Image (tube, rainbow, N blue to C red; front, top):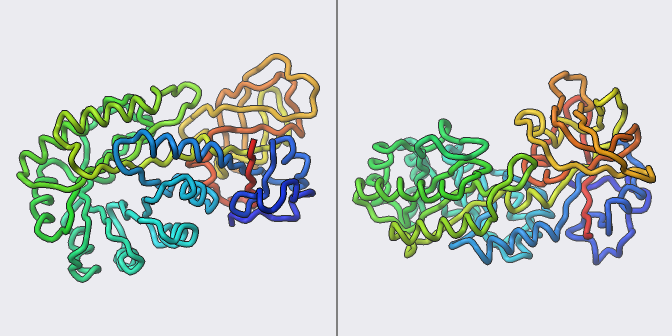
Length: 395
């Protein structure tokens, strides 16, 4: 599903084969790609250089081991770009993700940090070399032990439920995580059967306040003191944000600095420290090119929508950065537009507003930026509308 359809590109060899990152048709610019395209669907774009730069930011700045949350974008080109950048750990949740990562990066270290897994997934993971397993209840811990036949080389990670009240745009409490007293009991139960034991938490997706990580570490400190259990690792989870219009976070280094400060304050800096960035590694490294099929006043009907890569633009009303690519000689003044997707479903609507040149018209291509995470990965083929074309832009 990720392999571009060669017939959709009129001139797919604009760059030599050795310049194509991981098998994708590669272009020097969006304009070059659009000139070569003769298809009818949206185009998914990856910017390998941006993904590489984001990886370097974490590898050089995060005070521990950075592990990529594969769910953000499992495209083989993303996985291979991260591997080539020096990242070696991948957070997976399913058999398919395990197999996808090992196919692209055979020597990767996998972390199965989904707190609730099927027994088949646990068996498959262990056979594939996975030793990192998360759990958040006694039943899940029991499943892990049974399906690994009481293996003596497990690194178990207890997923905690943090108190509510953080700054995340998408809070994650309520579905996973052990509450305080349950966590105390689970740590005591897991300690004798774990070769290595750790705790993990998630402050919520798109965290806007770096201090949320210090508050989480303070909670962990009190929990461990109550439990009286020593651990070997601490996983700070994800939540590292990307800048969207209306959601402007602090620089990433501020998050790293707060985490490092909290680790030192609470005496955790001697532990193995793990982070699980997803959005922050690939969000700005991808976009969608959607063509305007019709304009009705300030409404633009596109060949891509919420059942494609624009799910968060519809469901969360996120106002992604947009650019127009057009044969028009002048961009002129900007006006606010809303988008409608191509399906027959009236829910396929993105309110925006999205600021574009006032003379935007049928046939123009709109680049909707920062969709490398949770955009391309969420796309479906509902109503027969889907993109089979992913390209790399090297400029």
